[in-house]
Length: 253
Length: 253
Image 1: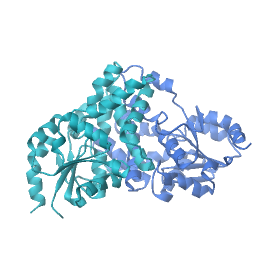
Image 2: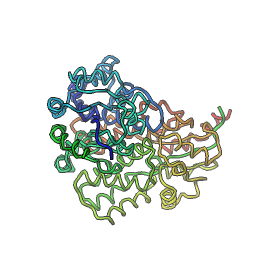
Image 3: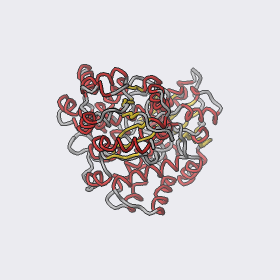
Image 4: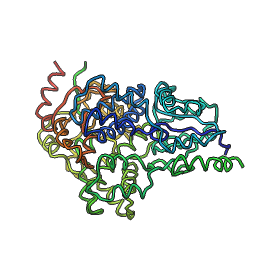
């Protein structure tokens, strides 16, 4: 097994909080912010999977807009074009998760990149808005091979961009499908757990009160059962920052 | 445009009601039947999409089991192997939707087949249990090309099995992603709407009461916004049975 040369981070849901758009959605559609935000994100993922399976690529900004249109249509809400434009552009100003900000403050001396479904423009906007542009060697978009995760070509983009072998790269992600796809392609994988099985169990404790947020957490927060076990698991990106030196040392005996 | 030669039906969610397993799930996990059934079905679809995108095929019975294991894990419930076997096998005894039974009672004189993600064994079991084996010329499983809908090869299975051109086949489905994939491949498409936009709007009317069932309906019942408009839309399979002669006549001037 070669030693680890780079850490490659997923963006949406790992470094950046997709729920950060909820305030803008709530402002536009009072009372519906939580529901619409969760359906929007879920459909954004579904559409990326469908398009990867169909071989029918469009830029992730298009996918993001289509998913929002679906979410809005479920409630029968009519939205003006400029409101939709504004919400889609809110995806370019997502906040870093607090543990991602802490990690980027402390971790240095490693090759670090982003590998994301986001288009090059979306990724540029994200890191610039968060002021973390200088922390990443490369912003790698799946757009280079016109597909989405978990298609193997999405992960090939990281290998192409970094000039490394798959096993020299650790994909760091909170998204179960991303861990599954990266493992299948041959990258090493590190899962950021964030929502433990027992924390999710507590959210779902009362079967009579499973709301949109609980359903979203149930669908999205756990390891996928088709994906195998990642090489490493950390509770948070902050924990990852602490463990990174020993992960590297262990891979490089 | 060539004239229509055959109607090909989706099985799960179009002819057969996947919610029919809920009683068995509730019996095994009291109070959790509704939640677990919806998460199970949603993950079954997600895993079929992921596997189609990854090019990592396993029989749909394997996918069905993996999805159930995920759903159970979200609640922290431990289930014995024989309970899991029994629930997975309940997927082979799904009830026909009432409108599907009515359609099959009345519609005759057409070439009719099933095109499904289900394995050949699962499809055989389904139609035998429902007593409708004789109504279909062919039970076409995507297993022939080892992928899942909406991958183009899934639809190619229908063309292969029936010896028809794509535009001579109408894919009849309630599943939005199925309409999208079939259209993209070049089949004609007929959507069974079942849940109208206004019916869904009523279910979602109170944003404070969006439960597991409402979230599932929101995610699964509407036309996907990336998929374009189907050639035909019927409210139900019963309506389709009434309209079938004029659909055929119109295509064959």
